[in-house]
Image (tube, rainbow, N blue to C red; front, side):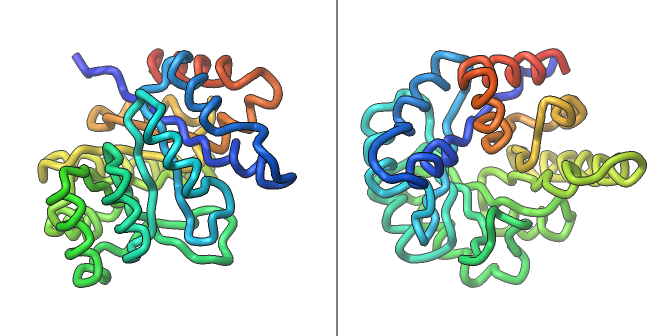
Length: 241
């Protein structure tokens, strides 16, 4: 029987709301505590280079006070590597990052970026931090990730989430094939980006998926039903699938 899929809740956009006005409210630490009580298995935070949402102070408080494992999304830079080594999250997910983008727009180029990524991956793993790469469900990118020696690939579901009908079904097949290939190489498989109550079930039915990381939709839905209820609903939707 397939083990339950872990749900990682990304609380970045609690900080985005706070930062829109300044001050301390709403507090990402409080969101993390609600997530833990509502059934989340982990927290994801993306410390961007421009600090547009989560800040260094947020990461320090979360690392010190939250019991859930933290998945730190980070760019492949010396600054972010230094921060990760200082805070020792459970996992570091290396993502592509461009200053002008609103959100992460695609997967990391593990193939073309091998020489740049290798020393960063090695230093993280040498410090007992699990390493994940956020990549497209491409066989070439998955194999390049395996050669880098990472623990996890997080397959980008953004394209799947923006499609419908036959096009979405074709992208689901690409995700399913990618997940199967990643597991055959010994990689743990996570997925995330753009997932909602309406489209998550099909992703959760892919046998190799072990964790889903979902943020923007949950925080948006929390405006209407509350954060705990949004997380519980997502948790139940995944479990039913």
